[in-house]
Image (cartoon, rainbow, N blue to C red; front, side, top):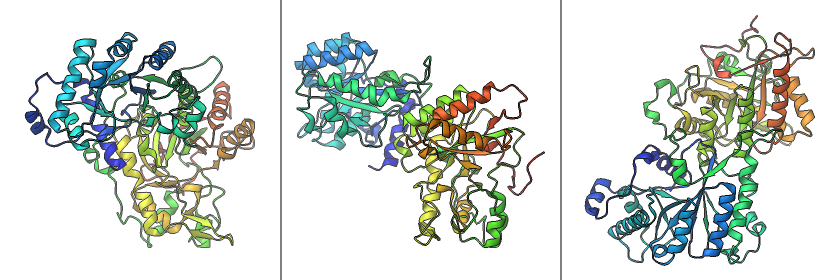
Length: 561
């Protein structure tokens, strides 16, 4: 199944969370099947939620010793999880199920594939498990997990759908067959987490078999290692502590917090001005100069043919190089963040922005964003605005071995790269409004590496984007040599040589794990600004680009007086 279909299915069930319940014993499976219309339950890797919670789920409940070690650790840490129970475990491991229940965890339905199982067989199995969990342990669950491969997968998914359950999978499967004899978490962690997976994600479903490892204490140790290395690192560290950290939850617990749940945006119902569009023909060769000069916010370092492909000398000379928003109020700057990242890098930025009661513009690379839509949703839900940084982060041009600017993609490839990014953003945050009532999703695009080409800029504007936005200066925080130097660079962009606010300056920062000093440096910058007295020439205010790049804004205007 492709990721788009998985995402659509994942989001569709959120509003039904509070309404589901186990079907009555003796249900008419034929009637349920007709009503279901052949739908197959999607297997979800995460819940659609902006809550700062990672979901813990477990299976394999046959051995008491590792299970008890795990339960003891979870109790010490105040963790709650979902334990999937099979019909076989109900018959053979009732003591272990009672133990889980006594520790206050959730029991859910573990569906076991059958060699020749039919739709009716799986409906009956689910019904029996649900009845046993409710009658013996007083628990009802809306969640099912298919516990192993084999059997008729379509029949199982149809049964789950027809019976009104939600099918849970995992974003992270902790157990791999080669680790059965592992003696320490270090032997496992390097294989289950890739180089760039620096943290778990909000709403991500983690799954672990408690009875798999030969060593009875390894399951608990693995959970401890995951918590300390991939969850605890998400919070922003500062003296005195704060509430920026992530916590863990069971499926039922997270699904009951309706204030954080969301569903996929019905993009067709959005206003016409928000619809994806390409080929509008707004920009032609005849009007290119007029449209480009008015809609391009440049950068001081983008000024010659090593960064500007296909422009004439005259056009390069006339193109904006200020990187300033000309109609910005006095002492106003703009904070912008490029690329994409994991929860640990972006959550820290969100905390710092919220701490200082300011907002920023996040230019998103959309290629990997659908794997973690919850994070994008949260960025916008917290009052920040969203722009595009293209889908694949391919620059419009690059230097060849002779230092000459050349295209990286064909015109058609770049058109696809640009035009595919906006619909992905729209499907996740297109319905979110900022406090002033405008959409959190903008039609602003930042070019990768800030380099531009004549053809690329025409493509961007014809893809429905209103402005191409570089900025006064990049902090180059991905290569920062020290925290002190990064703060100095930020200060230089925000202030002129006399320490006065550089009116309309756009700071370019990054949200990925390759820029680990950015949250702390930004915190230092904003704290120093907060401590300045009102009226100080160096005290700035922070605004959002979308509040000024509108209503026919023209970058050729002079700085407002």
